[in-house]
Length: 221
Image (cartoon, rainbow, N blue to C red; front, side):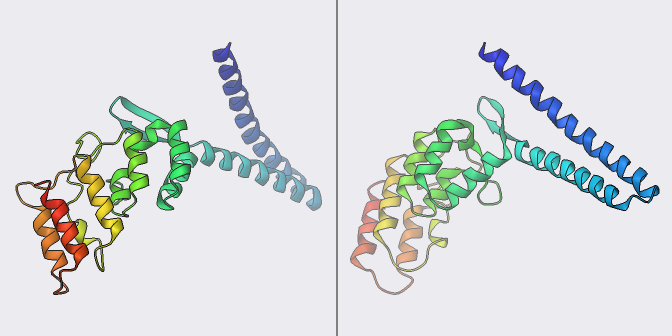
């Protein structure tokens, strides 16, 4: 019964779409015919009706346009309007809204919209020092350093090139969370501890917070 209901809705939408475009054409043609007979007022009304039908058709197509999202289980199509909502919620760091939309559309966790379409939610949350959003991303299937999910799986690489000022509790909490969840801190060509050490020395002062940060990272080497 559920399948028949979905099929019926799909057929109705299909018919309405084509009725809209056919109506627009009929109104347009009729408008030109009345214009030739010097019935300008009627012609204008018909042109307006044609335009309204085309506007409705275009708006509906934009709203229902599907985006292909690659997941480990294959490609999933999701309406562009939902993708835009997800991106907006994430950029506003609205954890509650992001969680809600991911519950409804789990494949959105693989929607790459950050760093020119190369990164997912976990990466974005890390670089904004938002542990709650990072927890949300992990809850919905993202993982640190999983090559299936992220183009650049060295999450902490260049972290200190994206933060300004002094060491904060938010930074320490963020890095601690990442390290606790297996974020990589050493590779063949970079060392996160060395980057942190260089960063805290830029102002010539090693504060207690700087020492706390360095000691934290050292534990995971």
